[in-house]
Amino acid sequence: GAGAGPQGPPPGAYIAGIAAQLTQGNKASAQGFARQMYALSSLPQFTICCMNGSAMGGGFGLVCACDYVIATKQAHATLSEVKLGVIPAVISPHVCRTIGTANCKRLFCTAENANMQTAVEIGLVQRIVENINMFPQVVKEIAQKIQLLEPCSVGASKQFLLNCLNQPISNSLIEYTAKEYLRIRRSQQCEEGMAALKAKQKPGWVDQSIAVKE
Image 1: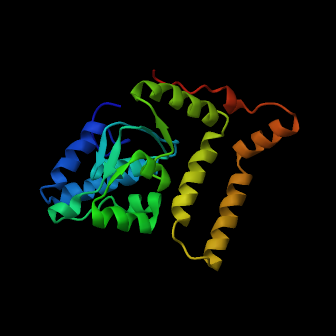
Image 2: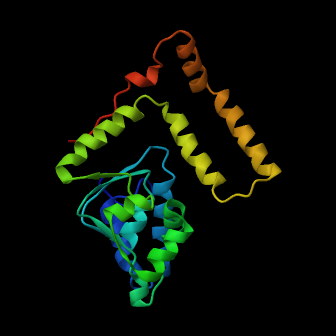
Image 3: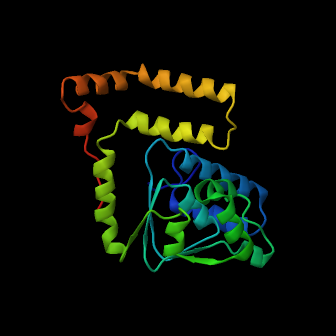
């Protein structure tokens, strides 16, 4: 959407402005960008990134904060902060979560320019297309799959993964996973889904069409 600010999902222009200020060593801007990155990564909706051109620095982090990435085959991604004597600190939690520690070391410390084949191999990109004209069709395909899913369960699954990330297997984690399962299993949405399965019918959310912009 248009407009800027911490109240809702981070608009592109707003994030771009914060990212630009990061180069000035502004602590407040760095904290603001970090919060917006978290806001994007923790949205309950399944987020899709259409990547064209280059994803550098903060842009690389924004790609990692999304749930599914479609990229043109000419696109590339790089983390060249070390060339400037800086480190990709603000985006590192999101990058590490997406591509793993070993790949982070590779890109953080060598400033390697990753092409899309490499991006797929390390888990940054899920789908490569010939050009930007193919973005709408691929997004539509994904939306058709998402439409079959219960929206609250999608959001809960995303939050559950974030909460379990890098947590050691412990009694508290086991208890948490069991409680979350029971909470969702006893929800109204789950009851509707189970009832629909028993009746061999489609649950109501399947008919709620996702509008995809062409």
